[in-house]
Length: 275
Ligand SMILES: O=C(O)CCC(=O)C(=O)O
Image 1 (spheres, helix red, strand yellow):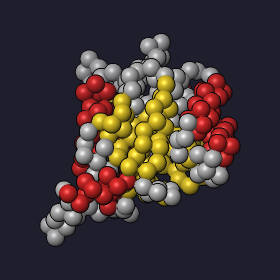
Image 2 (tube, protein in one colour):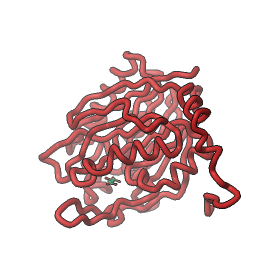
Image 3 (cartoon, helix red, strand yellow):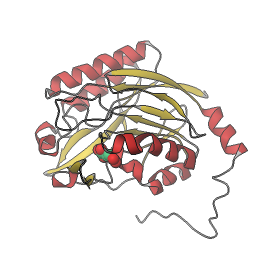
Image 4 (cartoon, helix red, strand yellow):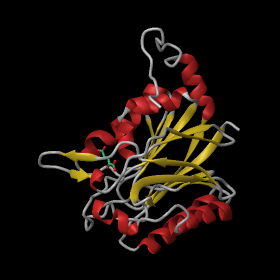
């Protein structure tokens, strides 16, 4: 099985958690009927992207959003990368992505590792660390197709993380994300292309649709970049979805023709996990 289809669900996110969940389920059902194998939701798909709201919209593992995503995966027989959900645990809040297999069983969980604390003059300010706690694990999961790496938005800016995932066998890396109107136009596509090119993987980014009434303006532009570094699919800012075929033979072809990963000089430098 060298090919599979991934659906990027660029959802509208409103201030009603239940409506956001229903909307996600509706789109999962739709893309599963169109033959998608994996459905990917955006970062904070059930919660407005606003630090002060994460706790109020949060839930323990097994809460309403979690359960609905697991059920949708099982009902539709599709993998669901459940964007991210604010996860409550021991009085902390994490920005967490869960993955469910075709039976609705959780097979992976990534807590955002790099918190998005930025202050760009005349542009975007955001401080996730006001309310969020960072995760500490590199996350990969296996499907019948290939091994897939999972990270969240700002995590893409740290090339060591994607290189670790490629070294551990990832051929695809998925990033639920939500860049903004300052950094999105400047760095979103570039980051997805760069991580894809460096590691000779497919990179997939899924963002919420843009809502100009919201406090945070998502850039949208959900994207798939190829192991050659070009863009295969890219949306605009509106709600919708795309289904992109992923060809794993192409990963092998690129890695054979331009063997970057074999040419790493491990005798001179090494990337080490510190735990
Ligand atoms: O890295 C960026 O510019 C945006 C990151 C972001 O929005 C996030 O991590 O949620």
